[in-house]
Image (cartoon, rainbow, N blue to C red):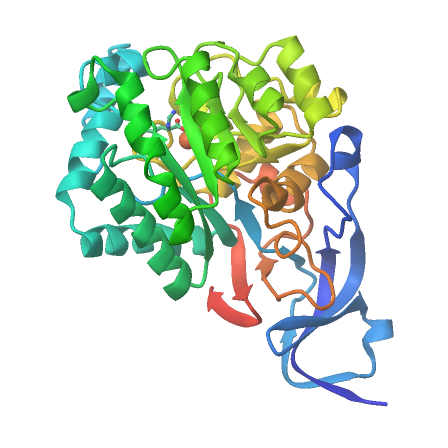
Length: 414
Ligand code: NIG
Ligand code: FE
């Protein structure tokens, strides 16, 4: 019997469903379900059928898209971005070229603090328009779900302004946004000599943030000259008591032990991990805390040493990948570039990279049940790629490979 659907994608060369019953840890990241010569049916914004062309015969539609042998996958998930911010920091490039370290620029009142100034000065509407511009670009790269952190306010008013912008964008933009409160991103000038009082002020915001559903996760920058492991532990433990899931900017520049702390507190993710210790990696594997690796940042900070992804995967850690899109340490929305860095600098296989940017990325932001996989009954967030197979993306680098992007069954970018 014939079954009528809204859209039929036919003649798919390779379909990656990424179907998985949970996050993929360690060697499981090598798994990939590839259907060749596939068809996908979409009805009411949801996936109605997935299978080979032969088995799709009963499905009929007014709208048939011939994929001409191209690759089709779930929409990508970017689980670590700082997409809402004011201004930009191109003037820091010269300092970088002179070899001034990232943390030194911050110490001198630049870096994150320079973006804080520009974000405080911007109106909510200005921030909204600017973030929307960046999100449009992310969507054009096939990203359909994005995590967005606050952290460029460092005062109550501006942190709330950032979170409200993210909420408005979630409601109005095709991309789904998932918010993280990163009030503890740096020590603001006003609290220069009293970081504890500052952290108290940020913690005092959490009840309101929870009530207004402005963020699901609480994050902190545990780093030399920013917050210590001890301060981070107290801060995050309190956030956990208030019902938030935790994330940490851990061991990004100096190896302080943020990785161990993330595992100890049962954080949903530990991010960066360039300096993660053997013990920290072992602890992540045990706790199931997802390692969100950000090789674009390591590249842009001009570092030689990248996160030890191979060791993490060999030890059974669940690894996800993200852009870390932000105005200082990784100003790019190009997640395809991150795939190439993951291949060449983290030595991840193409199979691991696809798992890290779909299934595992979704689990890293609590969206494992709705994003990152093509499964009948789920929303149809789908990308058609101008690529003949899944190996192609990490290989052909620096460009946008998207042919078209579907969000909830509708074409939103091409
Ligand atoms: O993930 N490390 C802290 N936060 C960002 C950078 C923010 C900025 O430089 O504006 C990061 O690298
Ligand atoms: Fe970050």
